[in-house]
Length: 114
Image 1: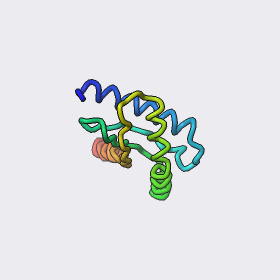
Image 2: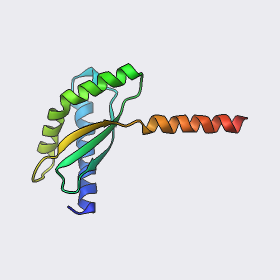
Image 3: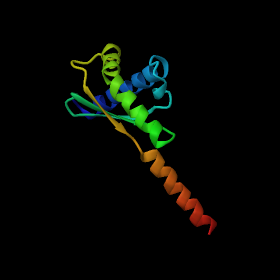
Image 4: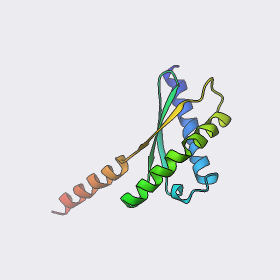
């Protein structure tokens, strides 16, 4: 699969998953989940979903459990929304890059004040 097609499919899958999580999933542990990006393998057989959960570490753990339990449902929604030869296997990764960026900005602000 060429790079342009992979990028388009990743964007489409991300949109589908954001819509499904915000509108169709009734588990309240997923209310705070925000999908940040999807990395699709070269052959399209695997997709890694990166997501953020603001809040405490306990809320992140609860959300991770809920995401793991909803993985099959999310994959089935991708299959029904996007025409592909095969629906990719979905891996889930808690994305902490937003937190790390916030910490970096905080340190920079503190250095500016000094």
